[in-house]
Image 1 (cartoon, rainbow, N blue to C red):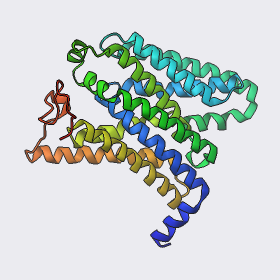
Image 2: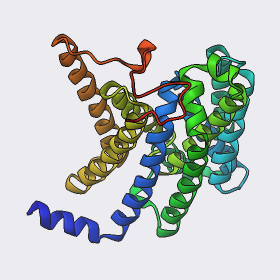
Image 3: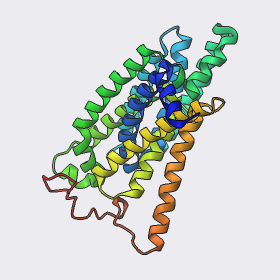
Image 4: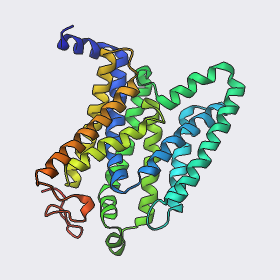
Length: 306
C-alpha cells in the first residue's frame, strides 16, 4: 500500500483517532513532567509511582469501584507521602524502597481478593492495567484523558519556574523564599496523577518509559532548560505517534511494545550522538556540571532561554 494512502486510511479509523488523541495528551504530559523527574533525580520515585498505579487500580476493582478512582487515589496519596517523608532534600531512596515494597505487597493482596470474586475474568483486567489498551480507548475515554491532561498541564505551568529554580539550586531557592519542601511534595503529587493518567493508555508497568527515556534523551541533546523541556515533550509525542503507526502497519505488534521500543531508541540515539560529539571535542556545558551558561541565571528575572 502507498504510504500516503495507508496514512489516510489509518487516520480515518475512529479507534486510531481516539488512540492518537489520548496518546498525544498523555505523551505531552509525560514528557514535560518526566523532564523534571529526571532533572531532580527522582527516577526511582517515578518508577515506584507507576507500580502504585497498578495496586490502586486492582484495589478499586476488588472493591467494585471504577479503576480510575483507584488509580488517582493511590498515586496521589503515595506521591504526597513520599514527598512529605523525603525530608528537605526531596525523595529518600530508602523511604521510596520501603513504600514501594509495601505497595507491591498490597497489589498481590488485592489481586488475590479480586481474583476470588471475579473468577476467571480477572486476568484480562489485570493485563489491561499492567500493559494498557491504547487502541481500545473509547471516544469518551479519549476526551476525558485530554481534559485531565490539560488540567495537569496547567498545574505544571504554575509550578514550572519555581520548580526549575528549586531543582537546579535548592539551597539558593530556599534562601530566596521558595518553599522547596512543599514544592517537592506537590510535584510528586503531580507525578502520581500523571502516572494514573498514563496508565490507562500505555499501562502501569510501561508508562515509566515515557517518564524517563524522552526526557533523558532531551537532557543529553541540549543544556538549555526550556528547550530541553519542549524537546522532551516532542520526543514523547513522536514515540507515541510512530508506535501507533507501527501497530497499524504490523498488527501483531502490541502498541505498548512499539511505543516503549521507540522511546528507548530515542534515548540510545541521543546517547550515541553525545558520545560521538564528546569524542570530537565539542562537549557542551550540561546541567549536571553545575554551570548553566549565559542563557540561565538563578538570580535573573529573565527567562532561561535567549
